[in-house]
Image (cartoon, rainbow, N blue to C red):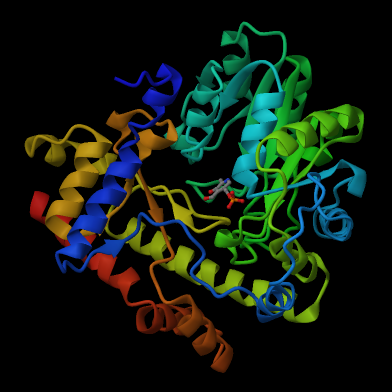
Length: 427
Ligand code: PLP
């Protein structure tokens, strides 16, 4: 019998994977499932990025492990221009998705891993695979599940390592929360006090719904913040597998370690993909318009579903970015208990089995199962068709927006109808 590293074996039992598998099976049987579990940009890649990819399809070179110089330069100026980062191409590392770069950063950095509860599903398993102790902050449903400086400090005090690592994700998957300057300032103060290195996962930074400029934790503690970003969300190119990581000036030496890890593992990102990323990160009018329009649609879908979730009685923080909601079904806890449902996992299985609506259990994101929280992805629609319709006639008023979503994203109201029926059948 093959002996598998126990750190790896533990990681394979993800409740979220079970739901995905279950959806696949149901759809294979011809069932019409509303898939609120799937978190991928539904939109086409910007045409100029596709054109550049075609142009470079024959480029089969191994590129430098740190990344193509032209791309690192564009990435640095993009991070400066869009988000005000103190960026320099010498401190940018290009990798096959920001997920891999986050893993490499965790590998390179010593110390316990602190995660806000809830956090994206992959951080915890990455920490476990690396043999790190993972410390979750106390979840705060009353505060919209945002991590407070107090909860962060309390988690730091539970750690026994002198250096610690925090992954902060704003806009947040799964809640859609965008941290304000005030919140970030307070978190930064705690990070300094307890010697915490921050990995700021900014993969959704393009997708924010408010008028205020996006603020990064790096603005408040630049000396201890690594930033990750990439093409997957705002630029609609998840499958291209292109991520970027920025090392802070004060940690310049870490860049070499990260490049060593890259050179001994993935070697480099495919050359055509790196070439195609250059126009994406340049300030091109067509790409900016593509990002702007797709973000407007994410906003409409997110706010539509949020309002509808509240209307049918779920408790749900208002999304400020990304393409997720994090409703909790605790107002229906008593009725669910009568049906024998006490955990988020049992709830998601029941919802899928009875209502054919797929959600991911909140426990996969680090929230106790008894909270009955679930992640709802707002992207179950045909992105290309919706983008076309949006450009033909942009909805102006709230009423037009509501009608637009109902007409062009039919699975969203359909999913809500099914949830509403499910909840009323509980009574
Ligand atoms: N971080 C968060 C919060 C995500 O939701 C995702 C993808 O779902 C990633 C990182 C990974 O992105 P990438 O495609 O750049 O690896």
